[in-house]
Amino acid sequence: MTKIIAEIGWNHMGDLKLAKKMMLSAKKNGADLVKTQIFDPKTLKPGPWDHDGRRKIYDKAMLDSNKYKKLIEFAKKQKINFFSSIMNISGAKMVLKYQNNLIKIPSTENTNYALLKFCNKKFKKIIVSTGTATFKEIKKIGKIINKKKLVILHCTSSYPCLATDVNLPKIKLLKKYFKKVGFSDHSFGIEASVLGLSYNLEYVEKHFTINRKLPGRDNKFAILPSDLKNLKRFINFSKEANKFRGMNFLKSEKEVRSIYRGRWSI
Image (cartoon, rainbow, N blue to C red; front, side, top):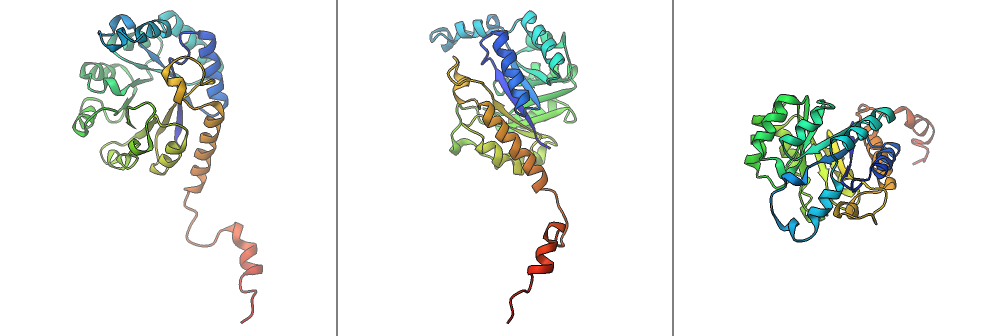
């Protein structure tokens, strides 16, 4: 059955109390996994973020090793499946201090081949998003990372992603090359994720928040607890509806077949 990744990212803005609230809400409303992002602004190259205030936001939202450790401990106590995206090898090394079961490489780093090779050696399971990549680059990911431990997420890296750019049929082609494929959905709402369920996805990843008025770009298009609950309901429905029940009439039809069938005379 498709599992939901609730991406709290840096919506917590470095506030551990808020991060914990988001983690608990995600679990309560149906998330199978909760994910955050690990980055160090000191390793961020110069760019437009130096002129629009984003670097200061990154500084505030950063989870250092101490904060990350506290969230790991909280997740274990609350029985929350918690993991992270990393941006570089130094971030991966920090995560390795606490776990090596699962890691996510985001779209912006899917051609960081040194990072892919490092994670392939160190982590048991690796999720990679395909946003911004050519198909040739996507196939190269499968040559670097052992396909037995690799999960590829179809992704369009626009925030929010418009319906015209969701491109769900691409998932069908990805499944010809990769055994495990999921969907990182940056569109507003849950409609695209629900439609994607027909492709038998490994994961659906959605940005998650408990309040869209919180600061940060991602909070603006993230789903709320009620949306997450509905997405879980659709996944559970899809699981049952897509089970093959045979070619003959079902037990639930027995009464209609025996009483109502042929009840009108010629």
